[in-house]
Image (cartoon, rainbow, N blue to C red):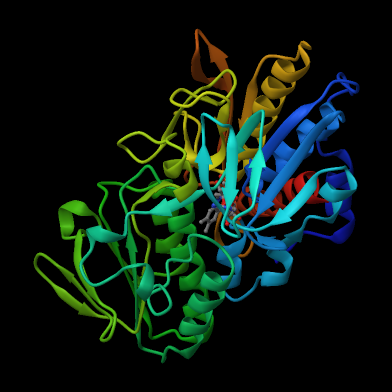
Length: 422
Ligand SMILES: Cc1cc2nc3c(=O)[nH]c(=O)nc-3n(C[C@H](O)[C@H](O)[C@H](O)COP(=O)(O)OP(=O)(O)OC[C@H]3O[C@@H](n4cnc5c(N)ncnc54)[C@H](O)[C@@H]3O)c2cc1C
């Protein structure tokens, strides 16, 4: 992983990381809360509710017995991170008293207040929290679908997809072409596109220097563009051809057999294609009726309650609460707001007003990082950026500052993983 990071410093950070628990304010009173999604938002919400109000029965529906974190997954794709280090389990949550059910939530009866799982079991709830992450609009580029993701990976949900993309890059010949197709927003963690391009370029530079990267981006600009362009000119000159919407960056079709990417004016035959589709809230959020026509879920930012369906809260990437970014840090921060609101409702106790943090770190290479962190608060029912808390790596930053941001990236990741699952 990134240099400068030691087990000792990470443990130190975990030890001092803000805990998910506020003082136990509602021990006696109860209710039933079901949380869907064992990723950043869902795990943090389940744990916080249980810690705030041990009398509440909290059940977490997790897709699998473990969860693979997206933050840091680009280092696996770049060949210097390990998927094992991205993977967490639910033992600590179970120890805190959260009931873990491994399964898939399939349908919500919002009148009866029940959730049905794929195995047919039905769970009643007083409050339902949905944190299913993202789903994809698969029908917008001809030739690719959920069924072709085993050949044309997106790797925008970590795990098998991450490993698949890495294997394809390893099998690629030196002198080959890697094509990344990026969508318009809103998308999960926009700077992760530039980070992925960077870390694949780092791999090629060290292992396959004759290879090239073509990025097709349907947008007119991309997150942290000046910082990435500056880094690419210095670290990977001539390797990355980044085509924005105006320069034929909009992809119309991909042939999964020949791995040919077609735009209005060009057909590019690539060895590996990473197609990241346009995104929406995860399926269960749509099935519950919490999503609007955009595919995302409007919420009241004071509580993260759905504005469309009573007794249902939507958090994490699935919620639409700009300017909060679709980022793990924001998902965990928002989970605390949601947990506090639910505890307040079920136990009639007072809790603090919401405040959120989104720390975002990206790597252009090992030891070369950028920071873009901000706090947010609620003002007149709107989410507002705390301008004074904004921290941005400037263009022209020194090698020392870039190294410090890379170290901070690693510390942040290990800290938040420890905070939510440790
Ligand atoms: C490459 C990459 C790098 C990133 N780097 C960063 C970073 O550096 N910093 C940062 O802050 N953020 C980063 N992110 C974004 C971060 O991963 C997400 O914002 C975060 O995971 C959102 O949390 P969530 O709870 O909404 O969704 P997730 O963490 O994805 O969790 C959702 C979970 O719900 C499960 N689920 C979905 N539907 C159901 C169902 N019906 N039943 C049961 N379970 C279900 C899913 O399988 C998944 O396990 C990155 C993302 C990517 C793709």
